[in-house]
Image 1 (cartoon, rainbow, N blue to C red):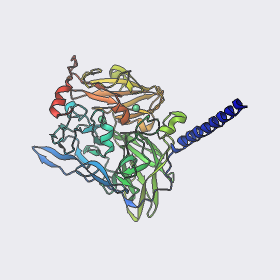
Image 2 (tube, rainbow, N blue to C red):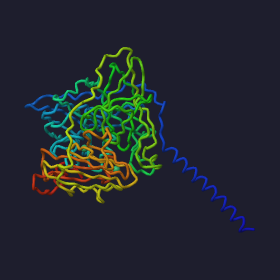
Image 3 (cartoon, rainbow, N blue to C red):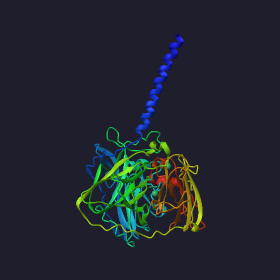
Image 4 (cartoon, rainbow, N blue to C red):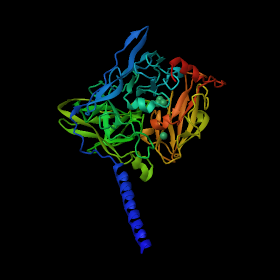
Length: 504
Ligand code: C2O
Ligand code: CU
Ligand code: CU
């Protein structure tokens, strides 16, 4: 009798526990999906980052950036943030091909940071990666010549182990390159009027309105926010006054991928990717961007109408568990409100620019990269280890594969590359132009082709890494140096940099 009663009680307890567990499981499963369709009120005008003032000194275009702490209104009171020359994000730097630029980067934070020029072709000691520390209170003044096609690049901190935090706090901005020699003049190009930066970031807030940087359930990719800020504006609308508008989309998020399209399904012209304009405009209804990637699109509107830029669930290629990394989320991002009368704008020309193809036959070297866990080729970032050393003026093919089930992408400093093949086939139009970051669905193989020109420095490395910032910080990064023909890599003395910057 007694045994039976004990067993019965035991059974009931087990049943209750199972119900609780299953319930919790279902709940955890369900809360993974965020869908803000129709729920965003679009009551705030989209903030447009100001163009950074610049001056000419000794024939150089000089900018000033100051990283500082402040507070920003995301609609939850005064949220503590970081920004450049302001409370959040930074001004848009703009320079022309052929110009020599200087950026005075002052660190007014209470801790070390760096500022990296993502997508820029430049000498490695100007790159602003983890070796170019800017200690609190110090100013770093990199200078280089802009020598690459017109493009929408960006800048952000790159302090090893801290990049996710610094970017999430608000340190990021755009760097636009103009190329007077190319006649993309038919594309909308009046900054803030018909040519608009669209920096998309997802944020989480705690009960006090502070930024919450806790990783998502299972924490696989780090922070995934449930609130979208565009140029820092939550619930933004853009007053459109021209028949066509160019949106320079930047995925400035730590981990989230977006698949941009419009709520009404309208098509748009994809005209540019990370490193420049496409050879020909590509008409489509979707463009997917993983962290760090950019796309320039031209949207046509009719007088008086409204439409919403939306992010549809991105195809991460990660199967049913994609819901834990944002793969099933939908966000209303930005409302476009067309004025009653619109200034005419020319049609998007079919041919945009010449994009010279890098050829397989010219490749002097092939390298293979496997991304898995927080490793690339089985090892983690080591500030003093150089992984390999391409020779200046040579072309290389990098075969990159993500061979775990997590979303990863791949970013290379110094160069813009071309996707030679995706799973052995020619790349789709979205990947046919200049790229510096590419999304890697699990088990797909990408061959990237790139040429290392102009700068050789055996002692100062460039980075390659996954741009999911949590992965990057966790060590999914490596270093290469570009050496003169026949040269050998030098010794990377990070200790000296550390001492110099007063970092510990
Ligand atoms: Cu956008 Cu190495 O970074
Ligand atoms: Cu970069
Ligand atoms: Cu990754």
